[in-house]
Amino acid sequence: MKQITIAGNVGAKPAETRTTQGGNTVTSFSIAVGGYENGEKTTTWFDVSMWGKRGEAAAQFATKGAKMTVTGDLSTREHDGKTYLKIRADNFTPQGGGAERQPGNDGYGSGGSANSGQGGYDSDEVPF
Image 1 (tube, helix red, strand yellow):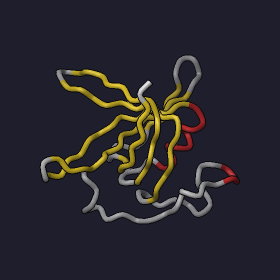
Image 2 (cartoon, helix red, strand yellow):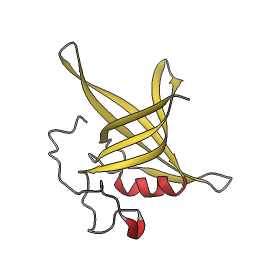
Image 3 (cartoon, one colour):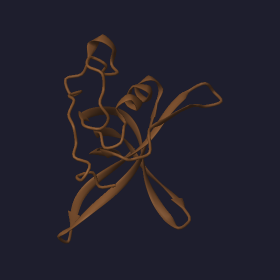
Image 4 (cartoon, rainbow, N blue to C red):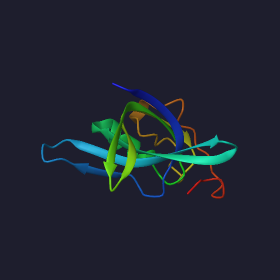
């Protein structure tokens, strides 16, 4: 298993939650991670999938531009000669930003999360 932790911004495509034929739910979204290579700004995209109740909770936070940290198993897939990075996430931590959420609606029930802070983002800073 290749565990990875990334922090970045959720892509423009909204999180999608679907139910498999076996009755399991899975939520999918993308995260862009910015960096620098040879003095140039770069963006690396990850396709994230999260299963069950955690995925359903993540969908509430996975809005365009939202800052999110995810941890999970790293894999790749090939399609039309391109390599895509995939993470089957075990955990997530919302870092704020993205669409506004209702106060107290942190997706975790009454327990809340210390890292579910709200905040705005400047759309000029989002790399997509």
